[in-house]
Length: 275
Ligand SMILES: NC(=O)c1ccc[n+]([C@@H]2O[C@H](COP(=O)([O-])OP(=O)(O)OC[C@H]3O[C@@H](n4cnc5c(N)ncnc54)[C@H](OP(=O)(O)O)[C@@H]3O)[C@@H](O)[C@H]2O)c1
Image 1 (cartoon, protein in one colour):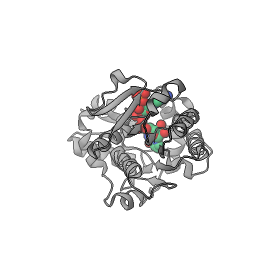
Image 2 (cartoon, rainbow, N blue to C red):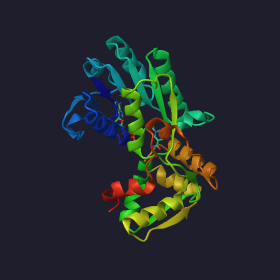
Image 3 (cartoon, protein in one colour):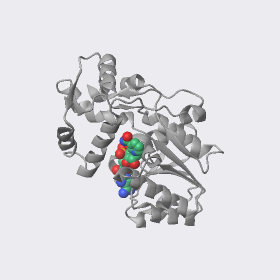
Image 4 (cartoon, rainbow, N blue to C red):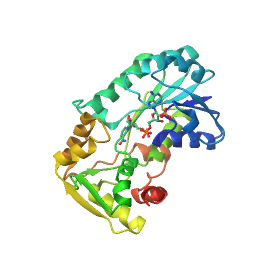
């Protein structure tokens, strides 16, 4: 039995689907199973990493787990997993841990990795860079007017399709040879924010425009729907990526034997979210 935490998330949903397609027995936890909307064939239990009493039932008969990084809440899960004899943990981490840990995002993920390492359980770390799914945050602006407002239009990243992150998670859960590995994962192309708005317009068949905000304004607008500290870090990351070309990491292709999905393919799959 494979346990998927974070199963209702962008990555976790694909982990569940791909494991079912591979014929595996899958259990998922959600804090609200009633609204989880997971496919038939997966056992869904109520589970909350911040409520340790929910974990023994979630972990019963589990031999491998995909672990979502709930900061500060992994130790109880890992202890319960050790008690149950779980033999493999695949942790969703972040590329941020590769860099100087001067921001909260990097620190939180490094602490999650440390918890997993210290648990003594066999692990694989997935360290993705920016998710393509982050651009769903533009969907409202695209639906209502077609102007994407953000800071640093020339900031480059190599965003990865969340389905591809899940594919690596599934390989690490099912195949040998991934224990003790930390995989930095990017998409196949360096794209600026204005490149992504252009591709969105092409695929959606819409006239879209990027409008440059000052960093201060962008921070204010982002802080309306995320903690101010996270908005601050994200604007700083955009500033440091301004005018650069993002590096493309080889791990995805090496592990799966194919090129990562393009941004255009992702937009086509998610088109309904932008219409
Ligand atoms: N976005 C990026 O560019 C980026 C880049 C690198 C790394 N990351 C990492 O990826 C994460 C986002 O992954 P995602 O997009 O797949 O997820 P997501 O869509 O943000 O969904 C969050 C998931 O976490 C689960 N969750 C939250 N609190 C929980 C708790 N206390 N106990 C159990 N489950 C809990 C939620 O489950 P329920 O609501 O069903 O309980 C949900 O499935 C980030 O938090 C970061 O760690 C993101």
